[in-house]
Image 1 (cartoon, rainbow, N blue to C red):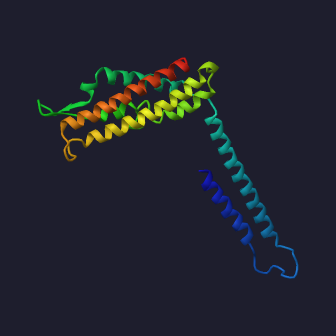
Image 2 (cartoon, rainbow, N blue to C red):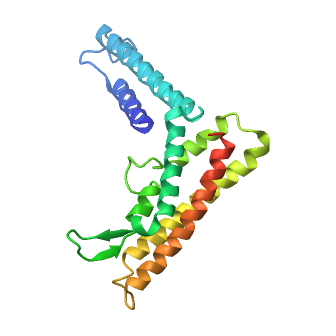
Image 3 (tube, helix red, strand yellow):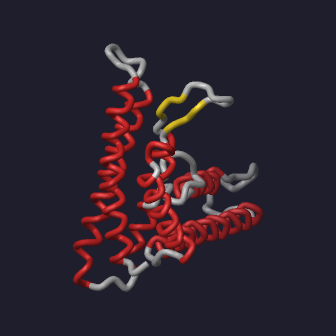
Length: 209
């Protein structure tokens, strides 16, 4: 948005330089009244747009420097419970059966959903942005190092779990693959979910949620 506004400013500035009217006295620096008034209007427009652009920039900076809202903190709580539920019911949640007693197969979609990687409506979707606001909360100074370390470990665990979950989706079709390969990578993904749960628990404790 800021970049588009700057381009608009440059376009307006070019327009002001290009303004001229036929009949202007080329022997003097005097300019027709119409040109002057139009340039003044454009100058005010440029100033107004610039002011709006800086206002938007300051507003965005202010939002980034504010603590999480209660709704954002609730997303952390709900997401943590969903991860715990996934781990307590891992086989059930990662198994999909066809209707009417059809074939069942393992599926990693539930893992990605619990970690906020499936849709924008998942509680933990882009939750790292909320974690970044956590530093503006009243965190016990003794817990700051633990908090930032837990955030880094969360990001690493989520990335690894997502990779293993993705690979498991194709384990049955790869050369030498099969149901056992799917299960192998699902279990590897589960290990990282356990690590993510531990990190998120630390974050929750540091934020006193």
